[in-house]
Image (cartoon, rainbow, N blue to C red; front, side, top):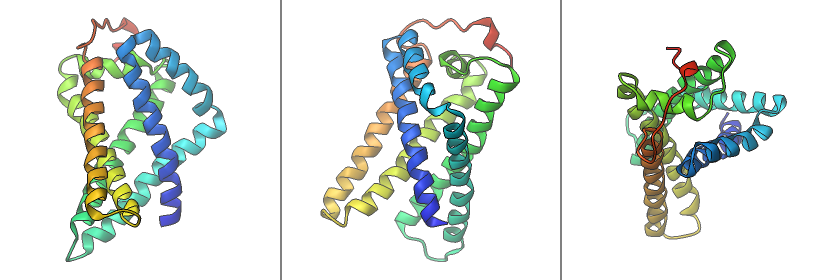
Amino acid sequence: MKALHRITGIVVSIFIVAHLFNHLTAWFGIETHQYILEKLRQVYRIPVLEFILVISFFFQAFSGFRMCYHIWKKEQKTKVEKIQMYSGILLGLFIIQHIPATIGQRWYYEFDTNFYFASRVVLEQPLYFYFVPYYFIGIMAFAFHLAEIHRKKIVQYISQEQANIHYYLILGIFFIIALLILYIFMGGKYDIQIPEAYRVY
């Protein structure tokens, strides 16, 4: 279980980093975001790869919840275990909502889940009261999970102090990424007009 969790975690992490990078390219305009999105889709929307990716996401959530449950049952938990448990729970909850919503709306409403799909929910009331913290917490849950895993691995080769610096640096980078993405998608960089086709809920 742990070995497969690790392997699917690498797959999921690569996609998430690419996905966040894609969102950051929106700083240079919606057209730039869409161009990069289409290039990425040429890879991850290959049917076999998309199936593997979706399965990897759901396995991450399922196996992560199981691992968190085992930590939860322990009477004495270390700080590291608590960070992994809570960030894992939040990340798992994000996955089981975000993936079905994105794929489901793509199939059900038959529209492109592009910049406007993501922007509308953080741009308009009352949606942004839920989705702004939802996206921020989702990104930071991934950041805490990744940073803790990295610290655990890297401390074998460097000092604990240096490993802690790596940990906080990763958190800081993702904190800035989360703020930048929300700033862009909430219309902070330029005016955003949501097409009527995306006002379906």
